[in-house]
Image (cartoon, rainbow, N blue to C red):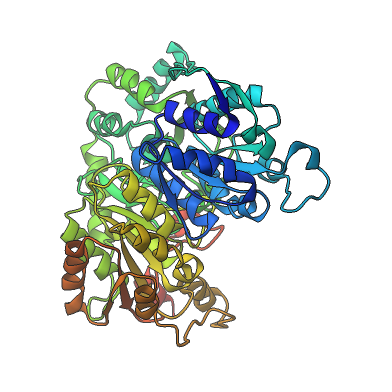
Length: 559
C-alpha cells in the first residue's frame, strides 16, 4: 500500500513492537508527529520537557525492560540536544534508536535554518547511524537500525530523515521482525581452556559487569558461583546479577568498592571477568590490578579482550550461552579456606557511616526497607550514586539504572520516567544530588503532565558533593565553585511544576516520607537535607592500585 514516509516510520515502529516513544516536536519532524497523532492508540508518546530528557527516558526504558528505547527530535538544536543522552547510552551499551528529521534534501549542506549534520556529530557515539534521503530506503533503514541496536553488544543507533522523505509516498509492505541468531565466535576448545583454569584455581574470584545484565545471564552467573565455590563482586553496571543478600556477594569493586572486594581481587589467583570491560574506575593502576591472578575474560565484544588488562584465556560470545556450556563442564568445586578468608575481610571491613545524623546511606537503607529491595532505582552521578550502589540490596537485574561510563549528571530523572513507563508494576525512585537535580529538574513537569508516579529523592547537601570530597582530600579544601548554598527551594520548584513535595531534615522523618510518597501514586519529590561534608568511603585515589583502598578510619589514623 502507498504510504507517506512519516506513516512508514510509524508502521515500522509498530513492526518492532514499540509501544512508547519519548520526544519533542519541531518543524522538520512535523509530518512524523502528524502520523503519530493518527496512531496514538497504538503508540504512546511522552512529550518531555527537553530533548535530553527524551534520550534519557528512552535509555531508562531500555535498561528497565530489555527492549529498544525510542526517542524523537527535530533538526538542529532538537537533534543536538539528544547528543548527551546518546553518548550516555553508547558508553553503557544501551539499545536505543534516535529518530531525527532534517531539512529538505535540496537544502542540505547550505547552512539552512536549523540544519545540522547530526549523523556526523553522533558518528563516534553510536553503533551506526544513517541519513535517509530516498524514501525507497526508509523502511529497511529503520529495520536495520533496530537490528543493530539489539544485536551483539547493544548500543544506540541514529536515523536522520530529510523532511521531504517524510512527505513523499512509497509502497510499504509489512515485515515480521526476526532476530537473527548470534554467530558464535568461540570454539569448544575455548570452553575447555576456560574450564581448565576454573578447575585449577585455588582462590577464584568472579567479577561481574553490565554484560551479564544485558545477556540475561544472572541465573547462569549465580550457578557458576555455586559450582566453583567462589566469591563475587560487581561493577556499577552489574548490580542485581548477584542477589545483594547472597553470602558470596562481596559488594562493588573499584574506586568506591568495598575493601573485601578490592583486597580479595588483589589476592585471588584467578579473576573471572564476566561481561566487564576493566574500566579505569574498576582497575585503578592497571599494571598492579589482580597482579597475582590469571585472568579469564568472557565478553561478547572481541575489542574488549586484552584492551585494558591482559587475559590468560578469553571466550568471545554471548555470556549466557557460554556460561550454560561452561557450567556443564565444571564439577562441584570447594574453596572453603579461601571463602573463609573473604568472609573475614567482609566482617573486618564492613560498610559503615555516621548513624547519629541524617545521611544518604541511612536514607538508602530506609528506601530498601520500604520497598523490600524490589524497586527500580535510578540515579544521577556523584556521591548519592555511590551510596545507592553500596547500601541498596539489589536482588534482580535491571533494577539499578545509572550512567556508569559517561557519568552524566541529570541522567536519573528522565531515566526514571522511562523506567516507570516500561515497568509500571514497579516502584521507581530516582536518587539525585542537588547539583544533578538542577540540571534536568524540568522533567518533573513531564511527570506531572502525565501523572507518572515516580519518586524523586534529592540528597541535598548544598554542595557538589563528590567534587567537594576531592577538593577536601586532594586540593587542600579549596572549594572552587562547588558551594550551592543559595535560596533555591526544591519543594517550591516541585509544587510549581505540579508535583507533591516533602522536606526531610531528621532521621525520624525518612520512613514516613517514603511511605507517604509510595502511597500517593503520583510524582513526589522528597528533599533530604544532609551535612555538606559527608564522604563516600571506601575510596581508591585515581591511578592507585585498588589494594590501597582506604576508609574514614584509615584517614583518621593517617592524620
